[in-house]
Amino acid sequence: MAGSLWRNTDAAPILPDMFSVLDLFSIGVGPSSSHTVGPMLATRAFAEALRERGVLPRVAHVAVTLYGSLALTGLGHGTDRAAVAGLEGNDPKTVDVDYLADLRARCEARGAIDLDGVRTIPFNFAHDVVLDGWHRLAAHPNGLRCIAYDMQDGVVFEQVWYSIGGGFIQQGLVGDPVLPIHAHDARAEQAAKEAREGEYRREDDLAGVPHPFTSADELLAICADEHKSIAQVVRDNETALHGADVLDARLDAIWEAMRSSVVAGCTSTQRTLPGGLD
Image (cartoon, rainbow, N blue to C red; front, side):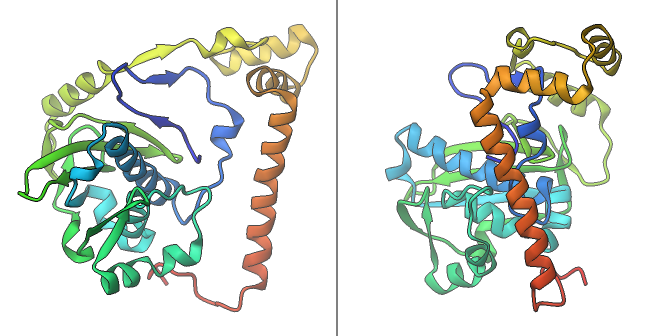
């Protein structure tokens, strides 16, 4: 999975103290980690939550609201299609790009989506994906809201998510304040930030690595003490976290994805990139 999924469940989610190279170099569909990968992960997590909570059979329709930056640049970044792809259970690491390119037309022709990949429900793309460029959530400019409704239009389940950059997402609170896009309400923003942070606990990822560090100065000191390069220190830590075989296999997969992307770009007959930004 591209990025890390930080999700509120019955227990508070875990924020890593150390990001792995496998987090930073992640495979995911483009064009944007924050506006394509993140929203797909968020809506996918929402669909999974419906299944895990046992409420999926009650869902008659769903709606996604993209706020602020996600709405204002959403069409160019394919954020709307990414959000629907996530509702259908797709992973940005493995989603078929042709499926994604034709998603809106296919949904409009069917008038339906396959929620979590298994439950077919009516879906009006133009109505059920709301691009609200006039408002933003106070806690972060890249916010979205997912709501599932029953046959009587009652709310079955609702979540707020933030795409915080680099393909990472963080769950917000349903009550996070909604502000006009240009408004600045320091008190509301701080309250939303504190409320969200109060939902999380931290895990000491550093305890499991041979060379723990929390700053560049500490890293350089370890290199000097151990007579190792930065690459050697980081590889020691990554091997401790993942195991040598898993680490090598996933790094090879990242390199292959990068290589194949370059080859595809160099050999494509399509002279203009998709997205409408030409």
